Length: 177
Image (cartoon, rainbow, N blue to C red):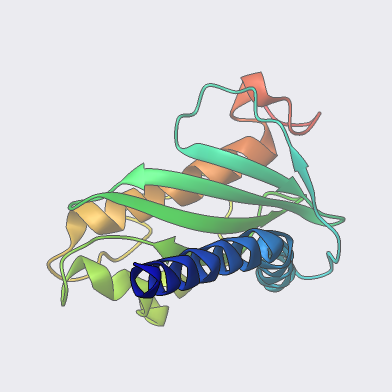
């Protein structure tokens, strides 16, 4: 009977130890996530080194989070793509100019819409744009991925509208409108 309990107790102790380690490292994981996000935001919004998350009170459902830096904002967006949500970070300076963007996650079709993760020529079209842009007139879509291209364009337009005040209910700037 004792031989049966020894492996069971050993397994239970190992599980408790692993659970304790997992919970104990939760703060470290969170700190690492915050550090990674801050480094990405510094790249997307040159000249800013600290970011404060602000509450978004506007009506644009594409906007998931707002981070204010010294030189503008980084706006986290989530838009519906062809195969699922597309999560992005978009840097917009105080003048309403796009300074950087990064697709954080997506579930688009491999070889088509998923190219938006790495197609720097497509993404670079958005840099230094101001105001609303459109696929076909201002932005060349990724070949075979028009829905994905339009979703990314909606994300960028939402971010710019927030910063310039075109998203009037947000009150992001005093000069927009």
